[in-house]
Length: 113
Image (cartoon, rainbow, N blue to C red; front, side, top):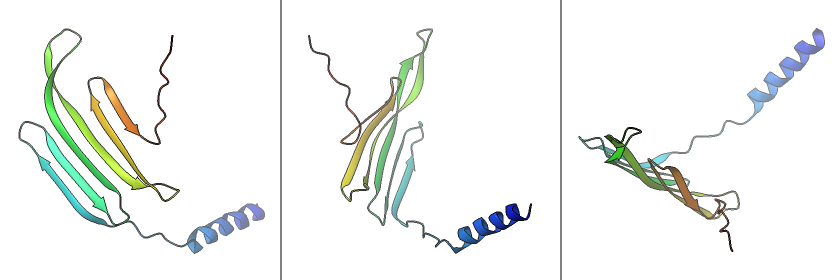
């Protein structure tokens, strides 16, 4: 029992002694909501990360072939990867799901005949 208490206290001491990391500051941020439900939003942080996104409303058919409004999201985000190189991911999210493209995202091989 004493050894469990000593181990627990040692873990607490290590956690308290670990240096606290400062949060990355946001240097630019904007969000604009459209009355019909669309939006524009973007931000940039001091470490060079950037995100931009636009949501637009469009009509899509449901299971009963009835139209209903959906939000289509298009955007991108950029950051510096672990190797120190800039990385950009472009994406769209709509009634077909989330689809992303970028150098670090694996490509689906094309079948050859």
